[in-house]
Image (spheres, protein in one colour):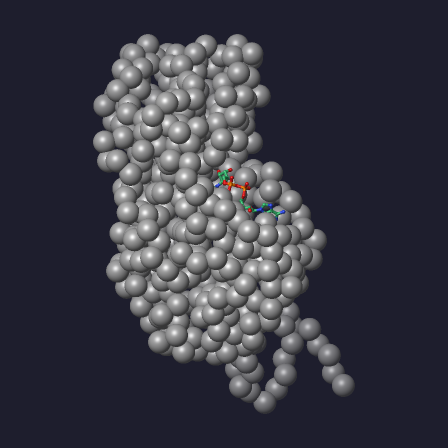
Length: 509
Ligand code: NAD
């Protein structure tokens, strides 16, 4: 990979780009932030971080921009988003490669992530003509009642390292057509991807005379709590761990702000005795080891019917034996690195804790050393026979560890699937209609995503994405998730000459 060329294509060789208002870059003013690639451990580039002073300057621009942007007709805002989608199409290869190199996912997944950005832009363009409200029949004569949706204001977007560009676009593209402006604080583990996105869209913003401040960026952790506590930000969309999400949620609620919370998952696949084992194998291996187990929807638990348990474990072990671990930019490899060395320590600790609680190692893990693994971030995907109630099984470890367990009845399997604090993605592999429908029924999966004969990992942008319980309850992307980015107003108009009160109340003066 020609890193220099990619960085130059995306305009990110230079330092001092810790904040932007979409059209102009500002010096962040804070400490230097170095971005190292987990692929080879090399320094990719450095940026500076935004201080509170810089944050305030950016917010002033955002507030002024909102006053204008909200007056643009929604389809005109949609046209800007359409052009952003076109620009992303042009830069797909370079941005996909940077995502892969800075975050460590495979090149195919990096390109797929940029494709998701393009898709959400297309979705948002259509949406810009479909921000529908309802009309209702008034109980009073000569009255008309309806609801309309207005832009909310400045949306704070705080994103996780594992989807360094797509999460921003899921929020920003929808927020923009809704008439909101955005301030994005990306993960400090993937700042260059964020800088690249701002550079890619800048020409579109300029060409269309979009007010400065519609797409703001602030690099560095200091801005996290500034956003949480800022009463000028009515909505904070937070994607990240449950631990930080809890803090964000409580802080923003303390000032009566709204949040969209997209937090950790602990996703399970139920393997029924009526399943197609080839499909189970594909769905499980991709779900558990894809992105090195660093997706919020990664498969972490496999709940297998006792009658097919041994067979399932045998084929899984064989498949794990064939996995190639190495540079994710090489398409021959299945598993790339974890994000950093700290993540490998968390992975090793989780394996140790599982063993202490009684877990039996079926496929051994370990950190890889030697040529090609210089970054120290490459680990072996491992499989552990465990029980659902183990403390470590109840937690999300962001690494390729798969816990397998047995069940006897479908009701027991559903209880195990639901018996964790998180509620993001879930799946059953079965050809039995009764089992599938029970799993999808009100007595079935308690997750935001429930699939039949598809694994837990990944999702399409057309649906509303998110999960329940400690996953935070947020929904973003498709369906009617846009409503979270707008405020609803109910309007009643009296076109008569009398002033009747509702509920038949008499009040004569
Ligand atoms: P993280 O919680 O460590 O960080 C997320 C973001 O929060 C980063 O931008 C970080 O800088 C920021 N942050 C840190 N302290 C903050 C504070 N006090 N206030 C505001 N923001 C603060 O998460 P991560 O390690 O980057 O990502 C992995 C986690 O994200 C996993 O738990 C994963 O499941 C979750 N995730 C969830 C979804 C989803 O849609 N449900 C999607 C992707 C990732």
